[in-house]
Amino acid sequence: MGRTEVARHPIRIREGRSDEFERLREIAFAAKAHWGYALARVQEWAERGDFEPESLSKRLVYVAEIEGEPVGWASLIPRGMVGWLEDLWVDPQWIGRGVGRLLFEHVAKEAGQLGFRRLEWEAEPNARGFYERMGGVYVRDSQVTEWGRVLEVLGLTLARSDTEA
Ligand SMILES: CC(C)(COP(=O)(O)OP(=O)(O)OC[C@H]1O[C@@H](n2cnc3c(N)ncnc32)[C@H](O)[C@@H]1OP(=O)(O)O)[C@@H](O)C(=O)NCCC(=O)NCCS
Image (cartoon, rainbow, N blue to C red):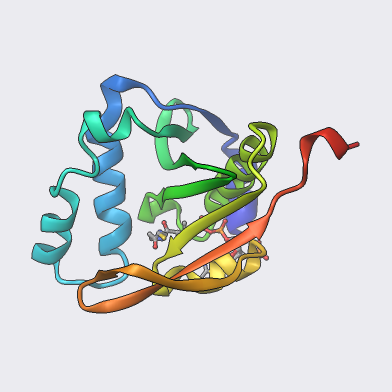
């Protein structure tokens, strides 16, 4: 059912634009709140600066859009041989319909083409099952805690673009 719906609404993935950062912050806020966290806590989290234009301009931002409207986005930060997946957020109206997979696979392909050996990220605990479906495996516990809990860093080894068919 969900897949059919996505098939009827072609998803385009493109680079983020500097004039849409507020919309991207809204999507991140709604996506994080989707897991049922206290809204005040999520609001504070969304306003702490990570989604300001200055922060986002330091990342490679990829936006998934349907009929010209952003429905999800992801971002990548270079860290040596590792491409760090800093963001992956799907508008709750579109969660569970294949947008996350498309974004993840797009970022993994881009990261491989940019020459990174691995893709790694800090996993929201509720999204762990999704990341396992994407092939992510446990790397280490994060140094950063979120709301008093230790997050896990997951990752996968990327296909090298020079050996791809
Ligand atoms: C996590 C998130 C990005 C996944 O995107 P999505 O569009 O809902 O995922 P998809 O519909 O593309 O699902 C892809 C696969 O993962 C599975 N999956 C999705 N979410 C899952 C979950 N929470 N637990 C287990 N499996 C999950 C799907 O069943 C699907 O499997 P299949 O393709 O083998 O049938 C999205 O749910 C989201 O934005 N969540 C809120 C914010 C968040 O936690 N972001 C991650 C921050 S680290």
